[in-house]
Length: 278
Image (cartoon, rainbow, N blue to C red):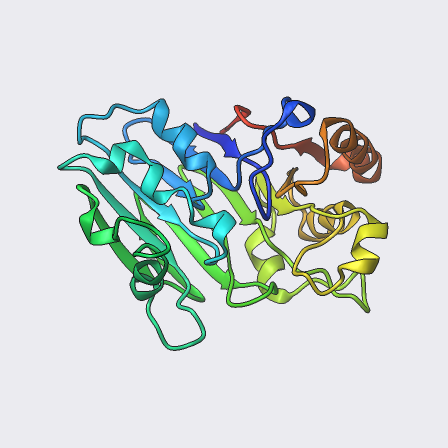
């Protein structure tokens, strides 16, 4: 049994407020948990703080994080994750190297320092180990993790996690081709092939995409297309636009369910949702 819990489901920027109360306003953070195994965290957005609130704050934390890329909405939660702010805690962070020659560790050190932030990575009490990972398969917390480059703005990983007979693909930021709405990058299809759960970027309506076709994201319809092409069992709409309130997301969800038809179960991520697989 693998539990997949959503602590942050937004893209681009946090957007708390009464109009977003049901789906939530924190940025990307999803946690995979299996009994008696360290957790695997998908992205370190502001939802990571909420995850930390349900864990012990005694230095016992052990786990790993898979970071898709280094945009703010996917990394800014790290210094607010209380379990890692304790002596004895340890986190392994995997992610792609920037395209300027720096390592993943260099990149985190670059934005977690004065004057941008008062505390450096080295000053956090817990241990954080960074691992550069691009187009490779590694063992993480007993799971087989496959990373593939996917189209976005800048170097970006998608992930597939095979763990205890369960498979989850995570394509949080995925650029839809502007000139071919049915084309899907080979790496993305490989990650999503036949998975139990595909967590996929679903940021835009078709009208929004027409004006933002090179911003690195996709439509809800494209997310359904990827899931159907890959033969995924379930699709989770994710990385919701900060301008979309709860009612808008309800409408997009209803449309996606119609497109999915009887062969594809479509869900829409909200904070606090747990999906049990296996």
